[in-house]
Length: 266
Image (cartoon, rainbow, N blue to C red; front, side):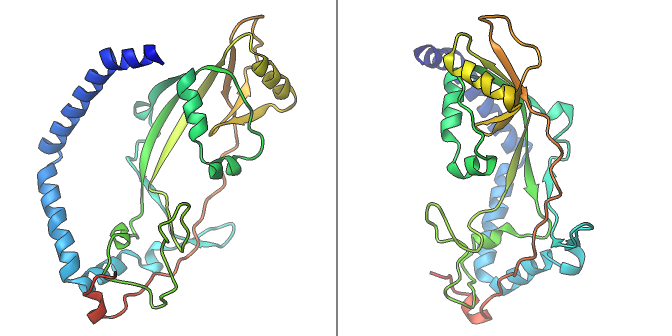
């Protein structure tokens, strides 16, 4: 850890902060940051002054006859989502990343229990030397949805017992959270430390169960057995494509009337 801190202080920190400064300058000049923020403030003011107009505008985003689709296999109705940028899976969009042993430990410990449950009970404990992979990220787009509705306080449900979210941890409600972005990972390679009893036990397990889960990754042992005392390589497991995901129709909350709409809900 002291070596990593020294490397961060002497090399990485100044370089990364310089990159951040360059990106912020580019955002101001090429991204028209100030103009955007000014327009956003004007829009926020408009939300409070013309709630009925804004609500009708939001409602026009979602037209069931146009936006709602039907799955050909299950006949389930859903509203499609997209992602941006559109080239998120192109070769130029991927970034190589290598994590050290300490960083991997931190990553594994940070995985929420809900994610572990979804991944199943085949988690395996490993003594890792390094983990490398390529990642790419995208923002989820929904042309039929106005996300500003969750930040606005000029509307509420007819039923006072209904809540979007109770604001607790973990939250509960009709829509306490929804996906706004996704990170793709590929070419996962885990390098295990040699002469590790923990890893020897893991390799024994992999002989009978070819794929296992560590943190949020699913992997398989390399088909080439390493020489005695050499590092073991694990690679991302090949899995079948995921099934088509569908979204059930949802009831859109209605405003409670023009008079009450003009008042923020406390």
